[in-house]
Image (cartoon, rainbow, N blue to C red):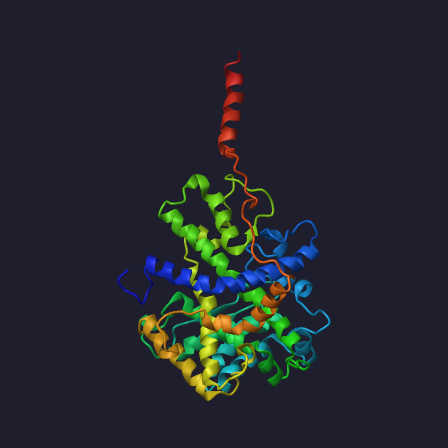
Length: 432
């Protein structure tokens, strides 16, 4: 593709993603080992310490968001974790209040407050007795500052995070609103999601939550920080290996190195190799499990989500440096930093008016995505897990010899039905 602002070539994309994955893999393997060990205690006999994790036990269809396990597997159960729900309810939060907090987050960075029409034209909670789409979505109506959100919000920690993510998109729209229509979009698929996730990352910093009065008893002890980082890992570290494996499968289908006769086997081979997951039951070629992902069914690239998950930490690290943060990255608070806001404005305001590499260089001083900031963010957790490995308390890695796939050959059900029907009809009309 000649227009590099649109996309990288497949060869470049593969090299970059493979490099990023090799940087992330040691951290992921440690977190995977810890989660598997905790799950082995929860499900005795069903999770083996040298095998992939059975996917259904993660309580997530694709094993990318393991937050449903949080209360069962996070360490130091006697120490209170971060749950904003009770604090917000004590303060009589409404759904709209969460959006107001997110708006104030940007105002404190000397960025743009949302216009009045945003509050009048957005939908913040489900409308009673109406069938409606509830997936959180930010809209740029391309009419100067007409921006809106549709979300069926709940007063929970999860939605506090999601609201800040969506408001990150809204701020993006507001910053590039004066550009030509053709440039009012993200310069790369990873930018938009990465920006939203970086804002949510900043909003969920324990230091920031204490500042705004939603977290009271956080003393930033070693145990509290490890507990917080495990929670963050459950929501942020399991998507990259899935996204990479899924895209490797898709690329291989297109270059015909994976044939239709082995679609399902090769899908689970890749999921085992990269994600360390196996199917909940024996699978075979009667099934097309890759097709359960909408992006496969609709032929949409998924690798941007891998890159966005890496990029969010890169953005956050740059902004924290501008804000003067010198402590652990996960404790950085951007609140009130005009310098960080000015830097963020560079990233948001250019839209797609320049190639994405040039925008990234102007923002971060480098022309490509990097996993260094992600590793920096989770370094305290990595140190903790490596200590467990050194003490013999954690077994890292898995074997893929038995990944839950049957090598038996099955005739498609449709063909069996046709043969049976043919046999019945032949005996009715042409009996022996």
